[in-house]
Image 1 (cartoon, rainbow, N blue to C red):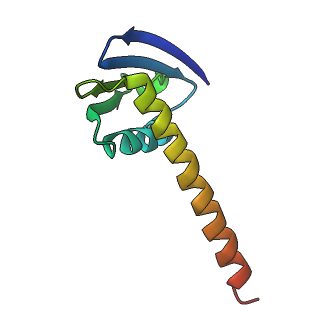
Image 2: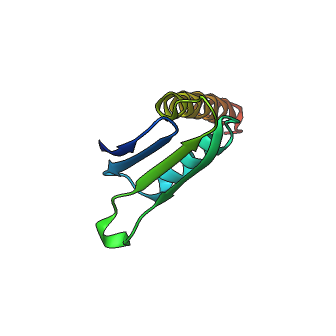
Length: 96
């Protein structure tokens, strides 16, 4: 994965996420829009054969978009860890 910053202002961040697609970007977008500091978050993949997603974040008032993005990534890590633990528990409880 490679990140290219296309635009960064006080309340906007636009990045390319080279090497990822809809799966990763959709989860990231959902984590971002749950944050009350986010005014708008979305991504676009212009063509499926040249899948270089562009993620756009616009934050409210004094919220820095890069800090909000890092927080969303931390939340994704917590969510995937919780899923992993729940799945491991379900496997152990599964009848043989």
